[in-house]
Image 1 (tube, rainbow, N blue to C red):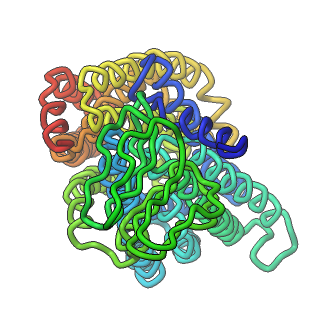
Image 2: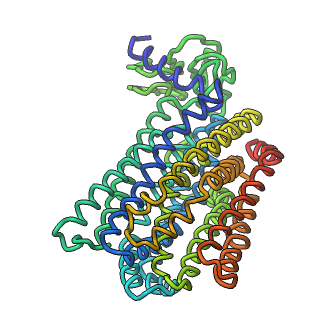
Image 3: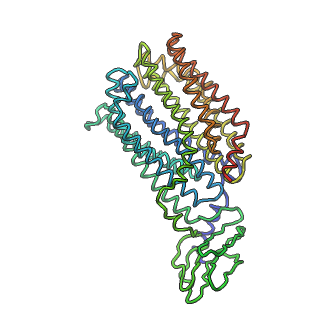
Length: 560
């Protein structure tokens, strides 16, 4: 073996011999998956935060319009997120079981499904923007600005939903840093262009919501381009080391002629099964063979574990890959969507989508509720600011931990390690709860200056301070709820979280907020009480579901 092939093989063996998410320290696995996603969530939340800050220069009406418009963006995003949860559960399970070829087929069909969702969301946002805003009974100026903002940002739905799918793929595949790279591009481009457009003399600038919409579209487009480049890179890396991953070694197989391949995966070997002469069946070195009847040749072999299964004059020539994996052409090159796989993705993703939709619909209706307040615009602006602050420092980081828990659980269930899957999710939940208590204390203490960054209106500041005042209690509850239900969804059990999330948002939070705020006359205090009660109940239910472990058994059965 030449030095180039030897070094390449050693690299391949090092990368594939141990999966840090299913082997070794659980704390290391949690950290390896969590830190890139935490940074990713922080970056993603910064875009909306900067938009809300810049909208503050345009007045309360602009802030309210953007707050409402972003709810529809979240509607499209959450539908895509639901599908991403389904594809992530399936892909991570395949990766944990070392079925990389099957994982790539799920990746392909996930991209098809989410692209369709993105197109529908784009058309819907453009065509129905006026009708959507009419549901909120907002003031005329809020409606005018909001419709324009929604129509323009809808153009970015397709690239953004695709970017979400790509980041889900990277998480499931054990490459969360790639997700970080995509969101870095989206965030940097969106924020820098937002400042440039808002304070520029361009037609869409000069303190206009148009500038915020165009900056977001630009960032999403460049981000998804970056994501596809990284996906192609990941595909090449997987192709270079696309063999079953076992700690005892790497075996590359090619079953093309109906003859049996070597099934002993505890050695590093390459085989050639020919019609005619027998193959060398017990090679223990890393070499490439060609045993042929006729004029076979061993020509210019530069690969490790390259195969030649031919009858007659053939030679596997000029191979430059490491551990080249011989797969059926329909597996490697199939581009048509598979109805069967898309049904699997939808079967897991649809309940998660409904759960996410219940959250978005609830937030939509909260704006409708605030429209009935005496100071409607101030209430809507305060909700938008407080919601954005909590989203930035808590919701997005917790969502990242939830997705990290789902990926780690999925891979470990694919590897048949239920105990490790449970412990990893439990550790994430505990860490998240402790961290959110500290974050909640800081958010409460700094609530007035933070809200004042976005608005100088005294009533907006008062409402915002009230909504953030219970953060030390509310955010740890949110942590338990999101991380534990995320682990359950990672096992492929998405129906149970759907039922309880939908009930919590639509049957508890919203009716209770309406009853306390309007008939009871408590106003924003009633909304505050409803938020606390609904989160407490959901966190309690999530903890009970998680600790019973029935979801682990269901996930293990699905993995097998």
